[in-house]
Length: 133
Image (cartoon, rainbow, N blue to C red; front, side, top):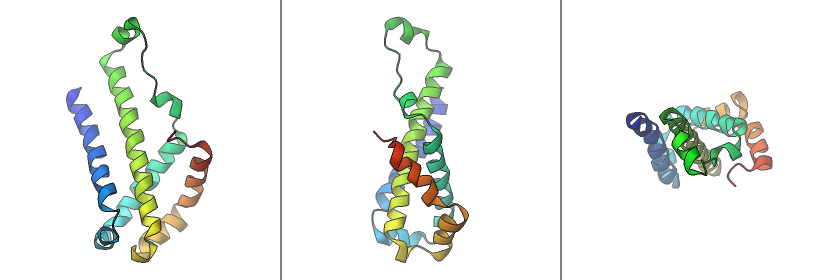
């Protein structure tokens, strides 16, 4: 299960690096056409955030017996949920950076986010539910 966890963790590391890089307009400008795929990924992650129960993410076994009763598969599922949530939050940050730098983002990306995926309608429920709390 360690290998599976590392595989999941690599996604979080890459998104963390992209999150740091896209803080600057220069990185967004140089990414150009690759932003279409990244925008699709960010959209899928915002949909995930709308469907996940935030209370389920922080569930941890409390007693010694509960901790010993957890199987490796359950532990991996819990870790996967936490990593997916972290990736979704990073994707939301990347969407924010894209929206702040609209003049530098290719028109194809903006068209895809607004017309095809309608990202605005996926972000509005997040403002109500605040899953980051």
